[in-house]
Length: 232
Image 1 (spheres, one colour):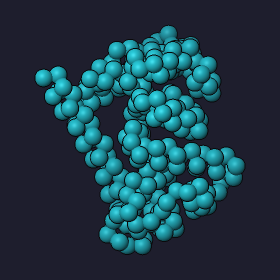
Image 2 (cartoon, one colour):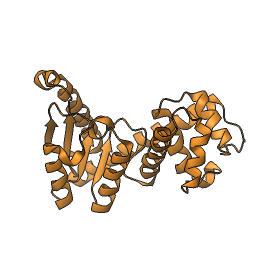
Image 3 (tube, one colour):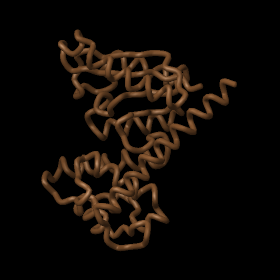
Image 4 (cartoon, rainbow, N blue to C red):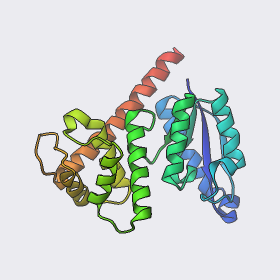
């Protein structure tokens, strides 16, 4: 059974004193841990700490990361990715650290599993959009996709690069794009629909995002079954 640490962060002293924000965050992690067969061995909170403060300068989080690095913990779980890092670049760096050191980063608000190749693509694409939009505020999505292409993100038929297509659609959705805007972006990027069409519609985007959610639920179910078998 994987050993998880639940991390929460609240920005204001009032939130810290009430405990309401942290209780909700830890509660969400507890429910996910039960579903996936993790054992939450620690619940830590950085009280009255701004998300702008680097992760290395947050006392509780730094201590948890040290235990993850040493192998004493297996999973760092947060209810929302912005509790961990406001910067997408910093989130990507944490994900790369987790991959290199052999532990799992789990942000429950992300529509894809961050532990695998799809998760790396998802965070990487979000980082590309964040970098692009910081440099060129108000740029069109199609221009941001050109930046992704220039960095080596492969776009093509979903049958060939399904993970990339899912990660891109999920990243666009999290960044606030509507189904229609995502459809336009995928069409302009030259990505084929699962049926081989060259033009995406709102319904085809909704279907793709439902598939992502079904995949996430299936992984959680598989994790739960594996944990139960391990206990027996």
